[in-house]
Length: 293
Image (cartoon, rainbow, N blue to C red):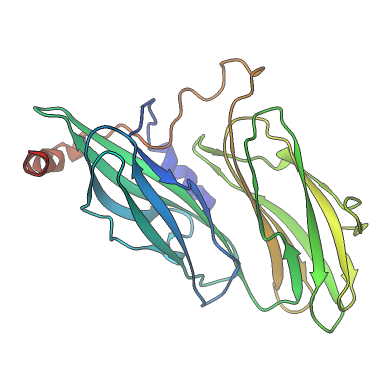
């Protein structure tokens, strides 16, 4: 699954740009959602530049793209300076697990003459697809905010048995996502301490009686800049692959002491485009002249 993510992004050449179009948020986390059920989140496309922008196709690419369904209400919209448009995305998981995909939308702006600017813009979607479980994990998602390389932050995770029968955590797993130098998560950026919090679990495979809870600490210490996505999953003995978990995410900036040898001007929001799309671009150019004239 993630190999396809890497393949898709390895074919894209990212270049520095003062992007006029931004997505808010860039990382969209869905509530834990039972298989064959649905949850919805909204992201906003904003024109923060001083030229009108045409919104093109909106789609998901790679990963678990079939399980995320964005609406197309913004497609074909022209956003003037300061205007925005909402994209509603449905998460409809078909199987259990942590699900990732990338939402892509194209934009074009026309500055007169042959001055046409084309961009590809991205947001990252993640959700946990679950089966019925009495293990409650709080929080079910957590953002490490305003982080720089060299920083550290710790969050307390609480495991609680909300049912009437004893639950044993059979296994746990930390899953991380790396995509094309933009999502740069590494396992060793997370330290899990089963002896942390006010009611330490003492193990990452605790047994919890009805109503009982325990805590662990998760410390995030980013090594390099970029968007971060990870999930800590706890599998229980209630049934086959029954689990709950927490999704972690962050937008990490370069710290003051890191020098300049990191990511080269990488920016989610703009890409170069290959020769084979020049013909459709010329067709779009004619359309843009009519729209923006």
